[in-house]
Length: 83
Image (tube, rainbow, N blue to C red; front, side, top):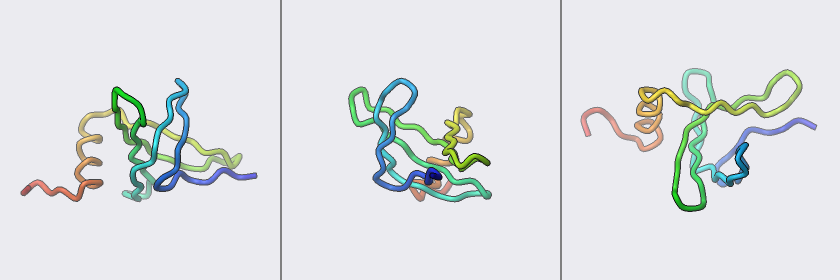
């Protein structure tokens, strides 16, 4: 059975056992991105790219580069440089 991409409202578990809620998804530059937030305090958010690999497994790569995080935040919130 193939895994499916994460969609808005899905709850997933990270490697540390924390639950993350998908707050949004976008496609940008040929990549699918998700905006994930913890549902416990301290509240944390992160962006990740997601894809299905050759075996049909979901692969999630957390975005760690600050400039990419800033860029994705603008896309997800609809902000422009003029705002």
